[in-house]
Image 1 (cartoon, rainbow, N blue to C red):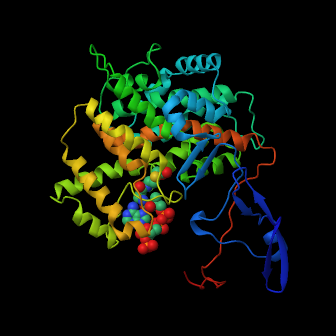
Image 2 (tube, protein in one colour; image 1 turned 30 degrees about the vertical axis):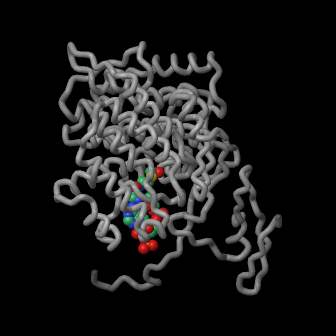
Image 3 (cartoon, helix red, strand yellow; image 1 turned 90 degrees about the vertical axis):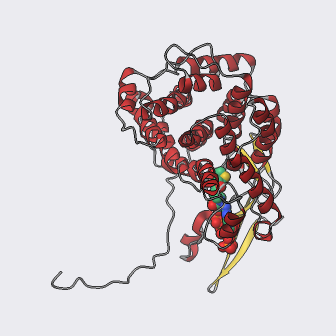
Length: 428
Ligand code: CMC
């Protein structure tokens, strides 16, 4: 394995170091390129750009591999739960029994919101999308916990555990409150005796005088959904979190920026977009075949298909699809026109050359939208659920930036293609 790559540019020859990761991934280190040659690299969309070295998640998109801290996602989905995985992602190791109970107790203790914060959330108009409430409120946490929200280029990590627990515990309460506020419903208080997923369901669906009691199947489907979304290396929202953290911004501000990035339909917003697409296909009286043709002609995008990194299969999609039929059976759902359309789309796309040649497979959002729908989670809450699941990943990635003494502000360059110098006319 060569230790350098040679680059001949104009009349200059340059040796660029090669960096090799623990799984054998290779990168050409171009950090000295501009200073040595005056050139920069150009990689719109960052498909070939490594923005950091990270110890958290490994993905091999060609082989459909996803590991958190070295553990395969399939084993984690089978043997652990969201809280264990959150601890693993944030702290690097699976918790011992003592660590698990201390972490859970801390999350329970931090679940409720202050009255001020409840008033803040209640002030949003009913028409607000819950993702908007979530982004604003995550950032707002800094106002309620100013000692945990200092902005400094040398991050103070002395209160990291508190800030991490607050972000993890309160994102779930804010999310559920955002749903109830936008429906004009009274808010519920967390229950210490419930687990993480059960608490979320209680906060969302309990009514005065009528507690929502989640079945184990529903709670375990939510738990699996959160676990599968816990972390996913340098995707759009996580890169955003790291970008904001690199400027010295606090955890809540950085996570809030992640929520905003996640909202986009090409990213976390895809699960909502999948359901909207299926509904529109159904309402148009199509069985999916016309929509497939429109997607092939570039007139539509098949939401829930394709991935920047996975070019074989999305391992999360495989796991969630595996639990899908079980969840539907336990919920007594046999016939659903949207499910039929989804199955037609999936079958057509998997056998059509347009999708095969572009390596477009169903991604996690294709099935998660359907499961959330079956669990009666409102469509505008799908992406909010993704954000709850992704919080451990954002917290861990923020910490990796904040704890790195060599961390630099993220500041890409550009190729300017605008007008060359010109004079302002005398009369404007
Ligand atoms: N439907 C139809 N055609 C598609 C699709 C799709 N969903 N995705 C990509 N293509 C085509 C695209 O038109 C292009 O065709 P051509 O080569 O003829 O120009 C080719 O496939 C490559 O597409 P791209 O847009 O260059 O690929 P990308 O890596 O930039 O985009 C993506 C990845 C996920 C944004 C894209 O596949 C997409 O928009 N999918 C639908 C949205 C979605 O489901 N997003 C959730 C991703 S998983 C959750 C997460 O991690 O955020």
